[in-house]
Length: 371
Image 1: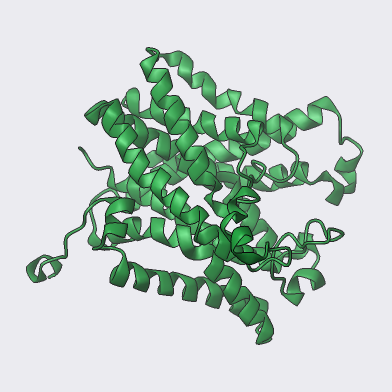
Image 2 (image 1 turned 60 degrees about the horizontal axis):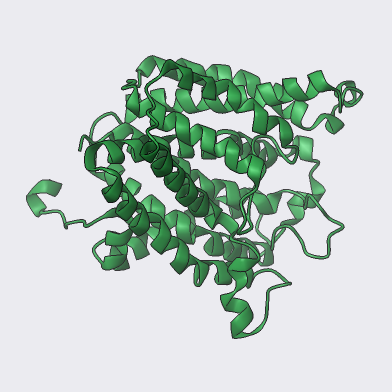
């Protein structure tokens, strides 16, 4: 199959942004401080001493969250349609079984229990540890959503659906519907439990379907799409303001009115689409041809994303105990987590059955190839 080096690298980049996003969470105040259990296991004193509007990490988190997962699901829809078109539905089903179901099931009994141990309400005993997934999937929710979307795609094509009609472009404004119903944050609400949230699932499913349409219509990524990035950035701050109107006196009076909610949803959806298309154009510039290290990071990104959360939380707890400053703690946590997981990927994953399950078989580079 033709390899889209730029889109493959972009998908990996979207996954790697999860490290930055989760590393920033301990520098933000608890969104529900009155709850008996904190929303995040570790908080740096900086999180409570710095007003949210003056906290740069709040903008970093919202900037990443506003487009990362929509972009990821759109690319997943693209590659799903590509695999279906080249190999057929049976091969697609087997591929998704290996790449999604196996990591999800293994993660439910390894990664999820490990993360749950950092929370004060962690279930005790072997039974509670092995059933922690029934309470929260943490960051592995995206595997469950991907599995359901792949199953839905196969059901649609079996029913005769094709993704080449121009009517599929209506998916772009249709995202307004689930966005309008969500209120928790800038962008999509964050799922975590084993049961999908209907409006959040629909939100991401529309991006997934558009990715399939993108492939089936043979749309070519253009470098000039990069021009969408500055437009997206111009919409970012107004979108955040409308998503959190209680922070701005001039907007608080309009909360609850129909036009305000529509405008808020429109700004958020526009940012997600424009940022996604802009990133595709940018990666067409920087990753349009094959590079070994880019391909390597693309392969390693899946392993890094699966296991980064317990290392991130552990690093946050340690750096807080050491009394490190917020910025140094953030950089050290991100860097150390990535370095440890890259090392474990190279030593114990890449050329083993684990790496084959995650990315397919990989062969060691010959000396002349590396030169």
